[in-house]
Length: 69
Image 1 (tube, rainbow, N blue to C red):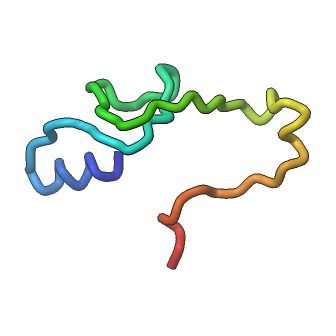
Image 2 (cartoon, rainbow, N blue to C red):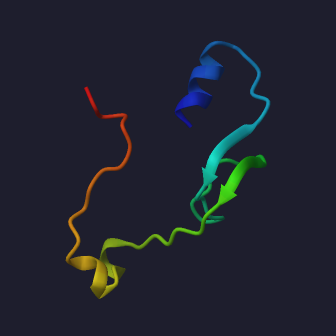
Image 3 (tube, rainbow, N blue to C red):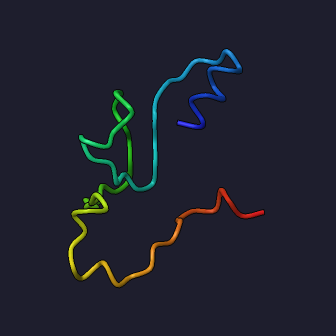
């Protein structure tokens, strides 16, 4: 969605979405157009109060590199 903002700001035309791995679900998907991806993976997500017992002991980390300086 960050890229969409940049495309709109540049007054360019958005022609589609592509990713190497698509881990979105119908519930979490903010993109209404078709996504082209190499691989689709089903990754379950949970609300904090519905976290399975096995996952509660694993520390939470923030994925990705956007916060690296």
